[in-house]
Image 1 (tube, rainbow, N blue to C red):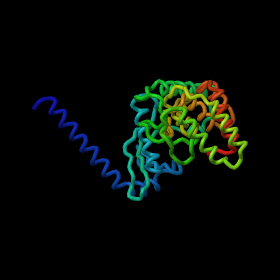
Image 2 (cartoon, one colour):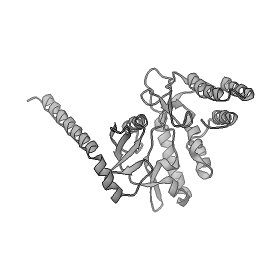
Image 3 (cartoon, helix red, strand yellow):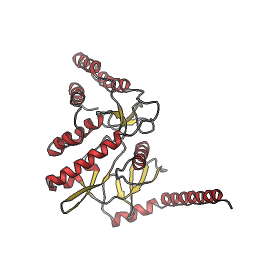
Length: 292
């Protein structure tokens, strides 16, 4: 038997093993969920510890599909610590299920105030390197479009809350879509419509399009604190990730940052610059009078 044929047989057997494991996991999910409720505390509203090494996340199937894609992409192309994705499917109940690796660590949001200044700066420097890695990734041809990883619809709370939209062929279409929907909502108030049209006319449409996490917030970061050392063990929740204008990571960081030193330290070190673009985004939502 040739080596190539032998390797082919091994790959075939491995695929069968994975297929059987996937089938069994889905089949026994109800049992595992009942068992886990008795053993493990709830992680989040839609995230449950499934076994010692896995968690399951539930939600709209299309949203979890985007998260699984982006998480796998980050794992393959960056050094950012992310959970391994084991399975993603739509159940007979229409619910989406995403099974991932359980990552050790404490949620940064609960630990931030307890950290020393050197520990905080260590975390921030690590985030700087993550953002640089993401921005260094190359968008598939043709470049310039805005959407999720594989040029599917965008899921982004700052674009449209709770729903998907796009993809967009370029930044101009992205700008037009976001502001036009606000204009449509505001049609009974002509001064608001005119103000929005003026801002839209001033929006640049020539930014570099970079890969963006879109939700770098303390509640999506796990850390391990040992003595004077504070290190990130995982960056979670990639469902809003995708190809966006280069300033978008900075805007979304502030969108979720709240007040306090996380806001101004992160703005200074993790996502500096783009003041004009961010102020214009704030201007749009301020004129419209609400978030969409």
